[in-house]
Length: 127
Image 1 (spheres, rainbow, N blue to C red):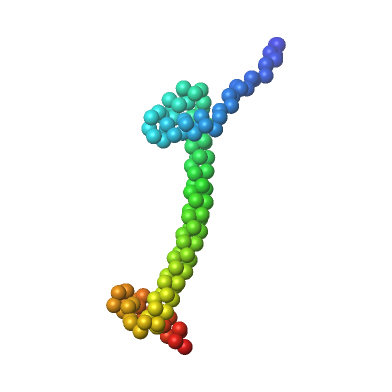
Image 2: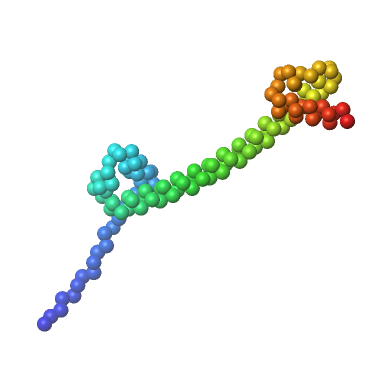
């Protein structure tokens, strides 16, 4: 009985695929232009690789969105502070104008809540 020596199994060499091509393939799949099976056949890539890229890309996009939301919140908070400063400045100017002229413009022209805030500022100015 002779034993045959098995030759070592040759691994399939995989081609390197650029990130842009991966994004293009995934974009086509998401838009419904091609299926995963068709993309795998055309580009000679395994279906599991394509689904892996899709999972990775989705998590990458979610991280970017989360970062963008944090930046957006920061910008909105800064804008709120800026607008509150402008509102306070305008109220100070209106209160000073009412003190010097003796007319009560805020009660006639502004909403009640703003008129009350200006009234408080007037009291602070007269003290």
